[in-house]
Image 1 (cartoon, rainbow, N blue to C red):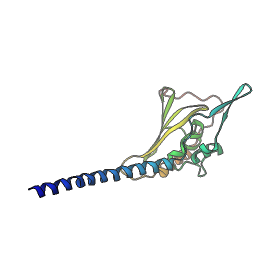
Image 2: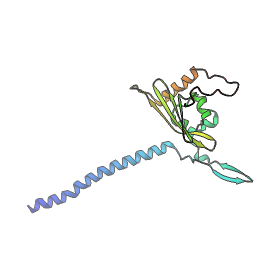
Image 3: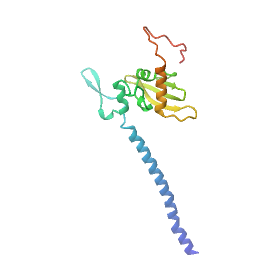
Image 4: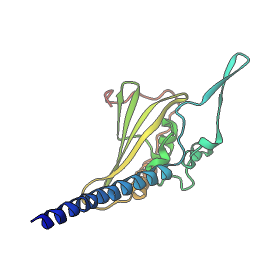
Length: 185
């Protein structure tokens, strides 16, 4: 009986170590996946640029290392294809740029100081949340999603929404814009 007990006591730590190793491998895999996601997002973008006082006016100081590739189109007038290929390309864009690229949103809802915009196509939808920034509202959250069971890519969804905007003419205005028919929208 004693030899069996000794054998059992010697195998007990080995059995516990195997479970810990599986957990350690799972944890390591999760950490590597999270790190890969952070690397894919690029360097962090500061919410507000540092301010340096020059004379009486405050001047923002921009650091080129914080510039993310998807924001470059905002300065150059838009994405090269004429419409964004991914929702992340819309991050940092203002209402004017969104209207140029995608047209008027299907739904626009104020949420305190921010706004929620919804663009709906026949097979997908684009959700945008615009928050106040130094230069006005800008996109802080963008997510494209498929509607129904049909598989859709994010690029296909955004192309459909941008294509629908180009298919319907944007009315020209010569004076102040007319108020919307439904003020709740």
